[in-house]
Length: 88
Image 1 (cartoon, helix red, strand yellow):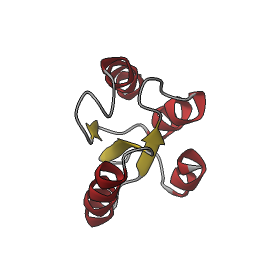
Image 2 (tube, one colour):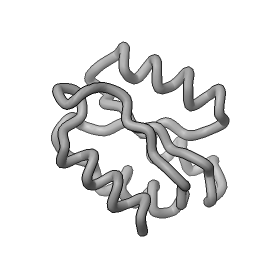
Image 3 (spheres, helix red, strand yellow):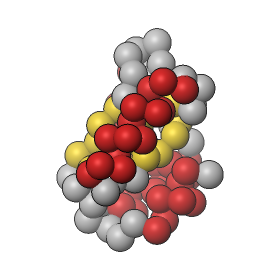
């Protein structure tokens, strides 16, 4: 999973990128941006943030998160969960 792959990054990353695995264009664009910045890309379901991804965000301790896609791709509930995970 994306959370497992992101385990290769050390804590304290500048950013994590979040995209739904169900919207190919959003994930593709986010992957390019994340790769250019040396940041991990974590995939989410559109309406819930998985425990594994939530946990990985906490481990990575990013300064910020970038969520790719609009509200039809990533719900407000996921954005709030990501925001809370970054704030931990």
